[in-house]
Image (cartoon, rainbow, N blue to C red; front, side, top):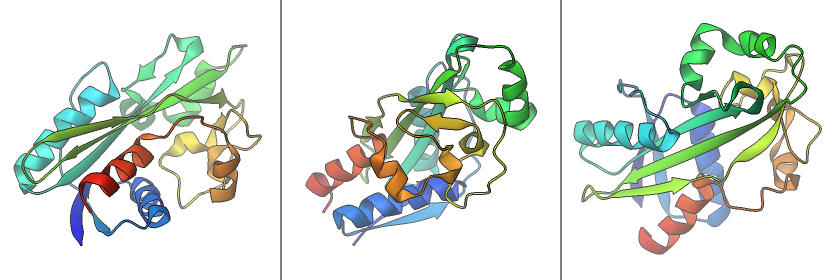
Amino acid sequence: MQEIIFATSNKGKVGSMHRHISRLGLDMQIVQQSLELMEPQADTATEVAIAKARQAYSLLRQPVLVDDSSFHIAALGGFPGPYIKYMLSTIGIEGIISFMKGKKNRQAYFLSSLVFIDGKGVEHIFEDAPYRGVITSEIDTYESETAWSELYKIFIPDGSDKVLARMNSDDHAKVDRQQLNSYEKFCFWARENLT
């Protein structure tokens, strides 16, 4: 069985990866490991994910996955993009809701970039298409065990009437994304190349 380290402290991301692997019946084990990685300043989630994956691989010297996500708000000119982690740690979702007061355009989208570095040090990049939706006017207080971030309390994906925090796997399946997400792309690639 192939063992791959997922360098993240985010249990929601690891849970998502486990669900995709299980659904496809892949013979691999994803092991979560939290590493102290430097968060580079970059314009895209992909650039951040590549830099962090290289750091993780240099520390571990074994196959490693790193994910980085960005969040883009139309009314704020696409801000915060890859700076969402900093924005959440400073002003939080309360600050985002405050920024959105009076804004008619509440559209936003997530982008996720997953970088896998294999045992030979070769980088493989898997990127999402935008996961579009709208920002709510109020924070939902539901605490989800599978949420990747607090943004799940204020984001309703297109095709749904619920915030991400309240969506179960059936709800997610009903939302038409039309394209594979980065985790699905990795799993299909892994089925052909790693197992």
